[in-house]
Image (cartoon, rainbow, N blue to C red):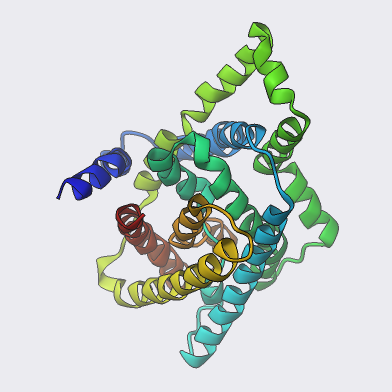
Length: 313
């Protein structure tokens, strides 16, 4: 009982913030435009600051690159599995396969992981996430664009990847960490104030993300059956993949610590990327409704799954 209380107490702040965000929506306390501005702060400022600090304190090893490749290939396999499920289920929604690939680490995973495991271990989730970030930018965005009648060149995809504040923060963090500049910056009060500023900025990430997710959380109870089945199918397959990758590769081949195994399970519990509905602006309400309902249901089940993950590990 005490173990469960400890687990719940760690995640309760996240749940309360989600509720608060939902209440702000119901009371019409803030507008959607305000929420969109909060997203900009997270994506362009607080989350990059968090990731820069995580990588600036990390010494990278070659086996991390193999892990990134494994995650990327797993996302590709999941996209093809989504196509397979669409075919055998005779599902008319063209965006259905996308619901099986990629993870919303940026707008959800980091906040959950940070709350429980702390900033010191954030680099583990960030490294696991890097493979799926590459997948989203170069594969998923291209796939969604084609479904919506748009095509992106390799140059356009590469530029959008390199211009991403998250990627820029990771690359600079790796550079600072690899060259040992972190210790040099910390040695002088004036330069260390820059790191302290980033630390304060990164502290906004969890609260802002939770408020935004709570505000936009919408579940249609009348059409919950199929999205729920889709979510359970996705989570079941991904948990199986996570177990195999953790057991056969992360533990036995890469010899990485348990922290990486926890990070992998945490990410594979997350919902599909929130970018998917953005590519559906011109689609019918039924197609977009299925995607939004599935993502919303997945958010709830992800939090429940994360609670279980904390108890097990």
